[in-house]
Length: 142
Image (cartoon, rainbow, N blue to C red; front, side, top):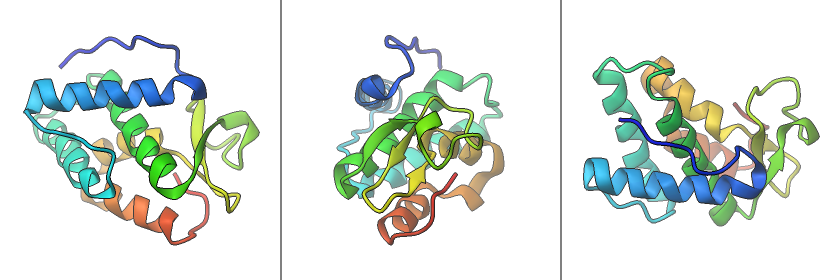
């Protein structure tokens, strides 16, 4: 599965990257993503299927990036967050990604990094639980 990123990796383009994830899910898996918290189950299973196929982070880099943006965009829309440059967030020096989701409570969430961790570490990095932790006012998370 090769996709091309069409936009620079910046907070201003995160929504567009998330839309690429919607297209990817539809074209590659005949699955519909609707930016609801429930759709994160599907995103989690898509990443798990890559893991089961033996695809690594490098082989799925673009897909993981846009799926992470999708996770983040669900957080933005459902939790009233915003995409923020990582260097201007509580995750500066922690997250290698250029953008994270900042919530009104001051927490920041590395949605892109979470997608990569899900591939690398499996079930312990369950995406719906990440969302629920953020929704419950948990501390900043990777």
